[in-house]
Figure 1 (cartoon, one colour):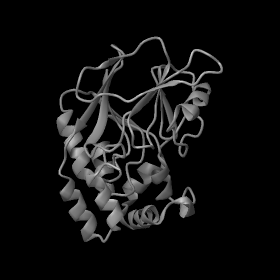
Figure 2 (tube, one colour):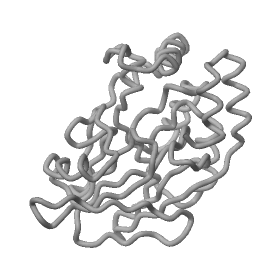
Figure 3 (cartoon, rainbow, N blue to C red):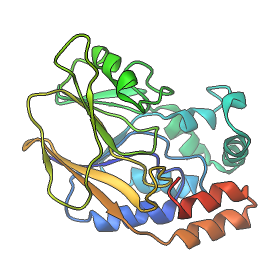
Length: 246
């Protein structure tokens, strides 16, 4: 089966639509790693678009935040604004959908899906090998997909007990990566708010039978999303950052 792996759409409908158009015909199902809402101007539309496909999804911290399932005092002022704004926008259908999302899924006994990390499903950021290496103890499958950091990366488990895992920054729009024997933690990057210095929407395609993963980037109309955010009086930092991928 071929699956479109996405994370951190963050209510950016224009970016989500660009990803779906770019990936058209190359996937059978969507695996979503959470944070469908928050930061962006189209939360209901993004969730309903996801629901129109055969898919599975796990909960992210912003999905929980808009449901008041976690304390947003830890959020920065811009994130708090977006959370409170989103709470006022959500339909009952979308709210109920987000409320029912699990925090982890296991597919085919090979793939673990979480938003943050295997150790702390919703909140922990796996940014460095020192954080990634201990997380390998918290999942039993060969591969774990995570989001949350908005930065694409692959961590490969170390063979030694006292060694740190290796980290690889992937290439985009090239050849698929062939999985080997090593266990991996894989982050596809963010659809709606990349933070790795590349403003293009990021996603991946996994072939579960061939055990390959293809990293993709696609341009989208950033100004269209920015204008929607300006109209709703979002903080300028939230819409400015989209043009720079940070």
